[in-house]
Image 1 (cartoon, rainbow, N blue to C red):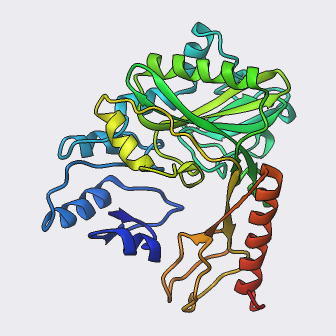
Image 2 (image 1 turned 30 degrees about the horizontal axis):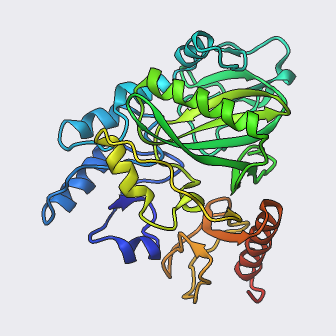
Image 3 (image 1 turned 30 degrees about the vertical axis):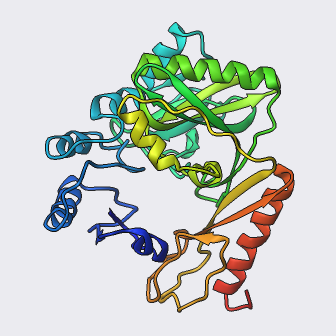
Length: 344
């Protein structure tokens, strides 16, 4: 396995690990990924490669990887198509799926629009249109629409989809990053008729785009109205709250990529939530800590965490979604208290 972080739980689970050269803020570089994977291949013969977030902005890296190893996931052509607002908007029009108006040029009434970076992830790339920094070929504009963020996690085999469930999502805003991803809770408070309709539309999208493996679709839902905002063509941030009681989502992803679409697992009653803890100040050296069992993505002792970077993830479960989110928020505040020198 390779990534930028080398978190403790990653190292505990990985048979082999090579830290990826580079920085999260800069993004993934193709040569660095290839170098890291080739080091891993010196002692291991991989069945293939599973890619997470970070490749949507540079799908050409997926093409480079596919020349050397089998990809268990969407190929470069599919990812580029999904992240092209013109193509996605046109497809949604053909499939009668509401999609917000968009533009490559800054609109005349920017207060009604958002600016997004093509291929961006995690919400940090989204800003008010009037605050957007120009970047040739990367920025596009999307009209603001009302509603609450809802994510649909699904498996696909290139022809159809199996819906795993819907989650309600929220942001963890800062003055400069008003839409930074904060967390998610399942199940989302959707009317059964809305959930059924969204499931049918996701199934149509999956077939039209030939998606494979784990993917997610982001919607804004306003009562009976909704809009598709984007599709994330890879395993995403809500995986852990949808991990089934038996089997694993990773195994289901591998099966779906091989053309075998597993049935959606039956989840027990109750709700599960996850939240990202972002460092509020610089942490020059993370001390050794007996991390609570409800944390993940735990940085190794001695790691440097800059203000605004992810420190860890916290999880919670309860009988209802509102309670699960409240527990996750409380635990996030507890981690921040520890990071600032107070007792955890």
